[in-house]
Amino acid sequence: MKKVAVLLIGLLALAGCVPAPNTPDQKESELIVVGFSQVGAESEWRVANTESMKTALCEANGYELIYDDARQEQENQIRAIRSFIQQDVDYIVLSPNTETGWDSILQEAKDAHIPVILVDRRIETTDESLFTAYIGSDFGLEGEMAVQWLDEMLQKRAQQSSPVNIVHIQGTLGSSAQIGRSRALENAVFHHANWRVIAKEDGDFTRAKAYEVMSAIVKSKPQIDVVYCENDGEALGAIDALEQAGYECNVWNGVIVIAFDATHLGLSYCLDGRISLNVECNPLQGPYVANIISALEQGKPIEKIQHIEETQFDCFTITQKDIDGRAY
Image: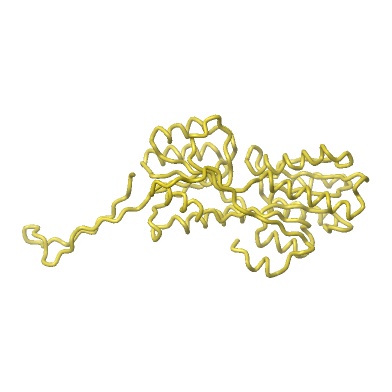
């Protein structure tokens, strides 16, 4: 494997460049070089994910981490990966912006014999050998958890047969999180004759964009029963717009707001009752990556697909202790 050698060279005597007395022997310690292409810093979740990687893959743990923020652009990620290849890194860690368009650049990494570890989001490819492992959430399962909870809640609100108007704020289109969470809602709407999506907009996983699109939706004062947001930031932006327009975000007699991530801020809104359900998406993936690299270094077998165990919180059961115990 390619390594960065850190050489500690003893001082040389000035006269004739003769080694000074008691000069220590040269010592070499090897760092594993990892290039990390992060999709961006669009949310609290993403910042926590980045910090987890930086903490786990630090010099004290035997790594040199080369970090690149793609600012939500796939072209920037492709450029970063090519730079990692040119720098002859040992491993590439990629959180892909979208699922498609990766085969060519990952083939370049494969040809250079550099293992690629995907985190957070999957890619769409017919050649599974282009990546070594995936670590992240099962986004389809997250969505299924949310719509199952919603179905049960609507029955409690006696809306199992009356019309249910849903606003769907999607995440970055084409990303794994958006695809899995959107598909779960779309399937649920298909199987519930009284559920209908009255608006569907791209919130790009940001509070500002969700506020913008929700503000446009509420101008005509439609009846809204549910707002399904694909991350915490979108939920916060949607709530800002709803409340400014006079809507109440409340599970019993207002708008049911569903979110994903379960960050500190998102869960505080859940405790207040303004977010009805928040499905966890765990960003602390750095130790998982370090464990995979350690196993690969030792020639041990690994599981190619590793889903992180996650839970959910609703406004009925969440406590301040749940929020205080979060690391993000």
